[in-house]
Image 1 (tube, rainbow, N blue to C red):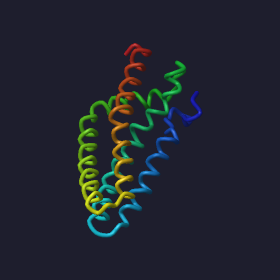
Image 2: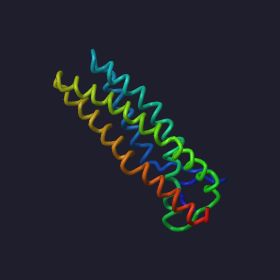
Image 3: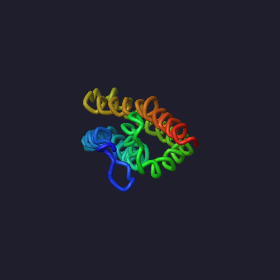
Image 4: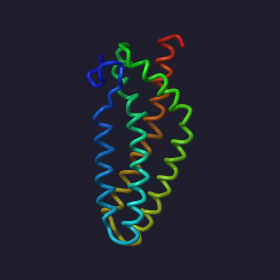
Length: 157
């Protein structure tokens, strides 16, 4: 069984994904300490991302704990936890993408202000967050769909 999985059929979260969220959260908190409009917009983005990250860590990231087992065709009892989670993610994909659009709009607003103020430090943070969200949309969510399809095929569901 994958060493990233907890016992008793619970899914583990790969550390790399959680670490990326922690780093982004730290950078957003630093940006939120800026004065004026940039600080206010960064604080708003920080709040949006805190809720978004928490939801992803409870759902999306947990499914990634299955990847090693799926790749090596060794799935254990964690499948009982994962299948409903994957189905739920599929049902709520539009809501997640909508939330990404809200975050992207907040990023764009922050970038606009950083350009006016020539604040390259906060602009870099915003660009990093934008790349993260894009990776989720283009890689993570489709991977979840592929994992679900692979599991259903393997189990004959």
